[in-house]
Length: 458
Image 1 (tube, helix red, strand yellow):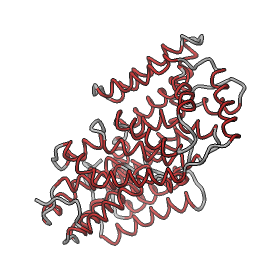
Image 2 (cartoon, rainbow, N blue to C red):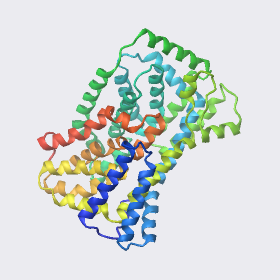
Image 3 (cartoon, rainbow, N blue to C red):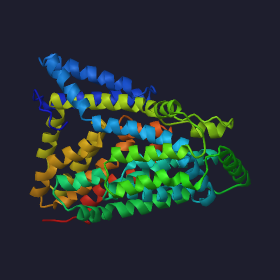
Image 4 (cartoon, rainbow, N blue to C red):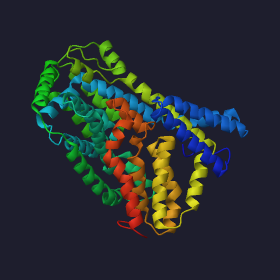
């Protein structure tokens, strides 16, 4: 999307009015009127089209911007479809039910939220993908929290915090590789430098989740045992059902493309499902599209296991297309470029450069909802300002991750925010106050910028 050429150069005050109007329209509609994000984003698109027409931009040019913006998300959309099929195939194979059952056996209720954060962090580091982590082990932890009658908002906050810690620090992560490559920093040097802000954020997050974790009660222990018995009654709890998870991890380490990794893991899960249940080809196709439907007769079990499928991703796909189309119009009308240029000119001191780059990364996440663009545009816009104040490139790549990668799931209309809500069923604004790692990372990076601590100069 960053290659979209503007067809006009708006005045700064016009760009600010349009930007503030869109932000207020979307945020008020979602928070005050509890609207799904689709409608206010569609209204924002109409507002941008009207503005463009008033500036004598032809409708064909505006339409081209819409299409180019939406086209930027096609790779993510195909990935979402395969994740939807992965969830349903892992359900029918028994992989997710077995993970939940094993979790009940190994993980105590004491320090539950802290354990969720640690485990999702380790899985995220291993696979390098926050979305895959949320869609697999995250779904299992939500099921456990449901059975134990624990806060789903705090559980989701722990899942998101751990998943995006892994996404940020894993050498297998595409955002980590993108951030280091944009500024020309060695990948592992970039990861080591992120430790200055990431390790304190991780430690503080772990402490907070430890404090929030509940204590086990007799009633809870009984409900967990009933839930375990219900899972065993499905006939899907077997040692071999973890094979699709092992396939996913191995292929990830072998650097097989994400789409192919998800597809192969799903195929292995479907093959395994025939070991413990009889299915027809048409039934498998229906599960992959519409999702798995549990029919145990136990309400809690059926609600937990009935999910997945390509169809479950349609809400997410529609919103991603709308958000990126809006982004395409913002670029076509020159609004994003105008704001970035104005910000860049006002930078004189080290602290202001770091704060401005962090706010830019956050602002792009809020305005466009796309973490890759947040990283890409921030990196391109602030290379020169960082050089002017003598800051090494790895400072910029760290800020891009601290305020770009981990902020995306906190925006209700962002690609990650939409995906997380769709998969685990917890609204973004509900888990946002508990996604401590994602909230602390940008704060720490700005604080270190003002104190000068952990910064590297040329």
